[in-house]
Image (tube, rainbow, N blue to C red):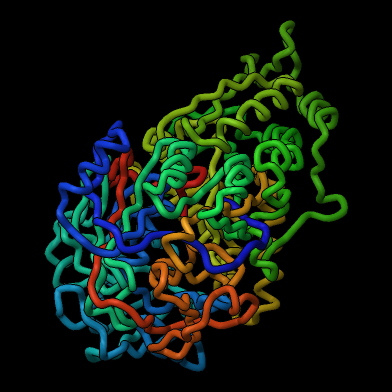
Amino acid sequence: MRSRLLALGVTLAASALVTVPFAAPVGATPASARAAEAASGQDGKLLRIGVSREVDTLNPFMSITLMGTSILRYQFEFLTTYSQGSMTPEGALAEKWETSEDKLTWTYHIRKDMKWSDGKPVTAKDAAWTFQKMLDDEVARTANGSYVQQWESVTATDDWTLKIKTKVPQATMDALDIPIVPEHVWSKVSDISATPELPMVGNGPYYITEFKEAQFTKMKANKNYWRGAPKVDEIHFIYYSNSDAAVSALQSGEVDLINPLTPTQFDALQSEPDIALNNAQNRRFNELLINPGAATSDGTAIGNGNPALKDVKLRQAIARAIDSKTLVEKVWGGYATEAAGYIPPMFKDFAWEPTGDQVRKFDLGAASKALDDAGYKKGSDGIRLDKQGKPLVLRLLSHAERDVDENAGPFIKGWLKEIGIEVTIQPKSDNQVNEETTRGEYDLAISGWSANPDPDYVLSLQTCASRPNADGTGATPDSFLCNEEYDDLYAKQLSEFDRNKRIDIVKEMQALLYDQATLVIFGYDNALEAFRKDKFEGFPQQPTGSGVIMFQQSYWGLLGATPKGEGPVPVYDGSQGTASGEDTTDAAGEDSSNTGLILGIVGGVIVVVLVVGLLVARGRRKTADDRE
């Protein structure tokens, strides 16, 4: 949910040779935290990252949040990944692939030099088991089920060859954003939605070794990783309930890297001599969800959304009363781009914006007149009445302790009051927002997603098939839209291999979504990051030299994290096993991509510390900064 204007792409800061800390409990003082570190008795290279996003679950079949999926990108390889330089698909688990002339059969050739972190070989049978489980078990389709909806069969013809047959041509087959799990572990799991046992066996650059609820998750560097082990031994993602606490920790040297920063914090850190800043365009959008009548996959109504919002004219009037320009200036301090279409402007080919008569300009007078014309009369107190004569009072679900939510909420409340709609802001914890939005128990909600270079996944979130089952699993919705015309266009774009024709279809879908107003894009805020440059030489950015460090559409940023004195920072150049020894500062602007080995230490540990985060096995869907 945030796009970010391009920025300072350079080598940036984070951690060095330090004592590996044991995460202190919630409320621990800096002194007690340092005492806990000393008591751990472990030495190694540590990168400590302060975050304010929670993990939903570490189960790869269930996780959809930005924090959860980011951790899992280090845990598991996918068939392909997005390159560092151009963000185009390149080989990962599969070193090459081809398709039949009718584009219904895809053959992937699996690397022969890959091992799981427990030493067992990675084979095509692991990928076949992962995909077959998703075909057979709707719960396993919760996070990424849209990718396999049109598949007919999956077969490992031998240990190194995977064949997938689809029912119709599918343009996303070289960009399947699905973690591949080890069959010898997950085939023994009776409840596919359950919290995974630790340590988790993985085939990515790191694997999870320990989790302490509300404290930390630890990941260890995979000595068997086919690209080579990282240069750091451990990483701690330390969760702070608000970003001010994370900034203080950065300034005191208790953490080395933080994301996100507020604009005020970003500006305040400009004068810090040992801190480097990164202001980068990113792949997320912010949105206001408007509940059009939440329902399950079979159309059964769920939740308690205000039934008046089923009226598209009411939703469109609300959309006209949201001023993106003000939000960009006042909430994001100018570090953002004004709203246009559903796909963030970072992906310029697919990005769309309304023109001519399509444009719904911010206009409170026009919004108020539209409500008058639609029959929503004002009562004596100035609040409009719905078609049943009840006052239009809407609940706005938001995240407590979130700067965007806290700052945008009052603007939304004020604008809607001007057009005769009363809004009650309901700030709640991330996990409460997660559960209530999944159950459709909201009228309005502040939300957002990260888009992929291929837009199919976020487009799928608005289809009828994305609606969950009665227990909240089986699929992942965003706005609970269910529109036959949109679904037809979705199927059409999925099977279109002519890129220009597909782009046209995707833009048509965004126009329809804009018109239906089940969501309103706020804007695309920049990724504001800060680093201890006295501890780290820098990190690979995506795209190279100008992009983000954290929350990439791959693992380059932390795979190539380079402690102070161990430079240069690698640039992954697509050479299938090596990384160039080129600093990201010098590499800025190059279209280099990577399937590479970084030159560095073998062994180590990544630790994700969650000082306040809850790991919820079935809690999947997040809003605002959290969702992937």
